[in-house]
Image 1 (spheres, protein in one colour):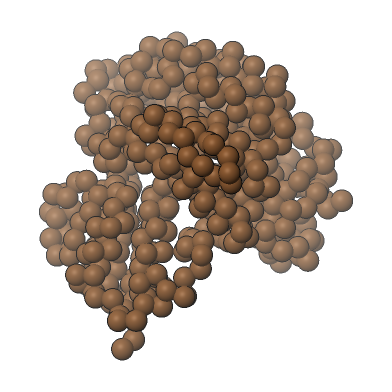
Image 2: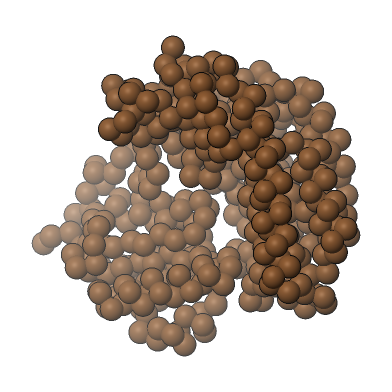
Length: 436
Ligand code: SF4
């Protein structure tokens, strides 16, 4: 009997990607094959996203496409929390689960497509199945979130914070490093809150006593000898302790901190974590300890009630904070979010104008900061080799969201190589360098 084949569509953020990897790893361990197209699949799993309305639409369309092309579909992921909406559009789906529901998805697969008798467990690579290229991997350290930001519905879909004990996380990190992964991207909804729900439980790893907390995790990951990049960190005072590890080169000097706004009234309306902290002071102190620190952030403009003056305060914050990488969205209501009830929503035109002003303001700052790197020697990691040369990333650049370093002519390099380059040119986003 040939092995049953499962098709997989993975939508959404890196956290959803990790869920997809866990489901695929389990299925492969039981002998299922993963099929790249609808036609050869016995059943299709769609891992959905429900973050903003556009993502909901994309998820519903993908379910529709999978049903039309294959007919047998299991739905999982964030949108699964809104069963009624899915069933209203696609009543014929076989099963719907919420996010982070590997067990439920696997039992639904068993029910509708029983596994073959002799599972090919030996076909499973020890690091599991990864959807990212082999040289980097996302490592999810917790699920859910204890905050209740008014524009966000993630806690209602994924629940409160549930951290993985530190020894489990470190064992996975070691397995990935042993399998050749050169860069780990640490993801969660709130990385700085790691371990809070476990009361910072003590566990043992490599003979050491470690607490399940952000600092111990960063220090332990720093022992693996590969790049470690921290995402979704909130600027709480205890984050200060991790910055010296960056200055010592243990983990990458990179912090992804979604500030979302700078005005205290808007931050309170948003119910943002660490809203009362003096973020400018904090950034200044971090840069004193680690001058090479790259800060990436995201912001929302046009939040209900945002005045022109409050928006200008945000632009002023950008000028003073001098962040390296910044993303921005015009506020758009998400079904079920508390912020939808707030008064004084802004006309779309004003939101779009503010978005354009914000982007132009930050583009000048980013360009100037990148320009300062011309002439420096930097270590970069090769992501891709194309006809014209190698496409790499520096310590300041996370894959897919930040910039790249182009090395013309370096076609002899391999994906996953670390090389030294001299930076020769910069625009507002990317760099060009030559091998030294
Ligand atoms: S911190 Fe706020 S935006 Fe982030 S997941 Fe939690 S509630 Fe949502």
